[in-house]
Image 1 (spheres, rainbow, N blue to C red):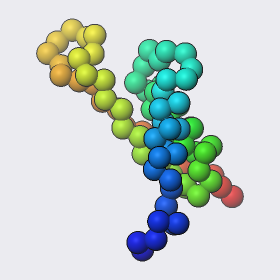
Image 2 (image 1 turned 60 degrees about the vertical axis):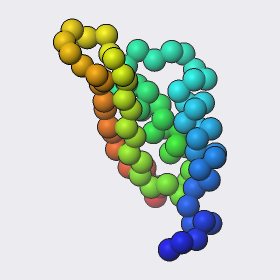
Image 3 (image 1 turned 120 degrees about the vertical axis):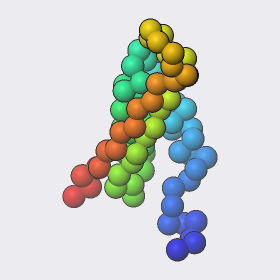
Image 4 (image 1 turned 135 degrees about the horizontal axis):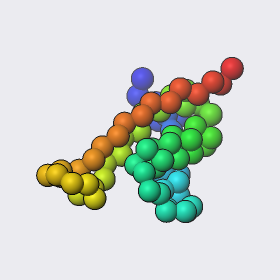
Length: 80
């Protein structure tokens, strides 16, 4: 439906993602960033059963002509 009470608080979600990315040690891998974000969301929102996280690093330090490197992960949380 169209009920705001049935969804997550997007301002809180933004802050959780921001903290997951910036509050701890610096990440070396986009995979680690995605995992940290997914884990933080799973811990913060009990009503979230699954999450899909997409991370893009522009101009990665790899040989070749890349405009960016991307990863997408999906995590399903066991709430049983």
